[in-house]
Length: 86
Image (cartoon, rainbow, N blue to C red; front, side, top):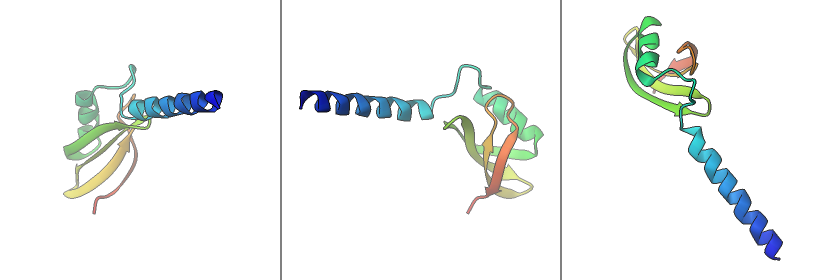
């Protein structure tokens, strides 16, 4: 029984650590300022949200007068995908 409890605690700690890392930029990532600059070069006139999320930058901004949601490459700032924000 003690072994099951110990395994459960270990699993819970690993899951919590993984969740904490999901929102942490990697050491080799562009800074938020560098990423914003790359996004502006890609046509964004404004970046209103930018956060680390599961291995990429996740954000929102204005492009061509439309509010967009986007994912950006953490090392280059290139747009990986974007959709209109609702």
